[in-house]
Image 1: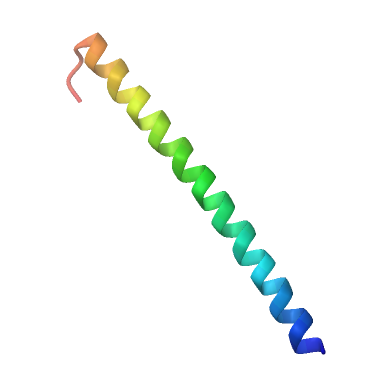
Image 2 (image 1 turned 135 degrees about the horizontal axis):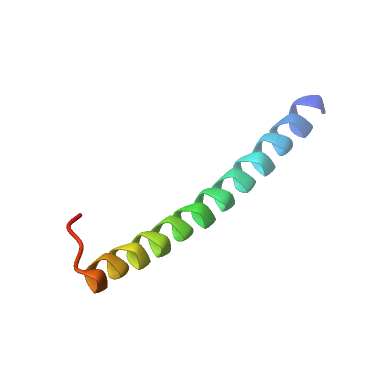
Amino acid sequence: MFKNSLSFVEESEIVSLLMWSVVTGIIMIVSGLSYNAFLKRKNLPI
């Protein structure tokens, strides 16, 4: 019984970690594309 509850906690933590990883990845991609567009608009060397 303890092992089942422990595995359930681990699974919920993995799901939460995966969700936050996806959210963080999307934010990084969007901010990166926005920054590249900003640099192209300003014509600054990278």
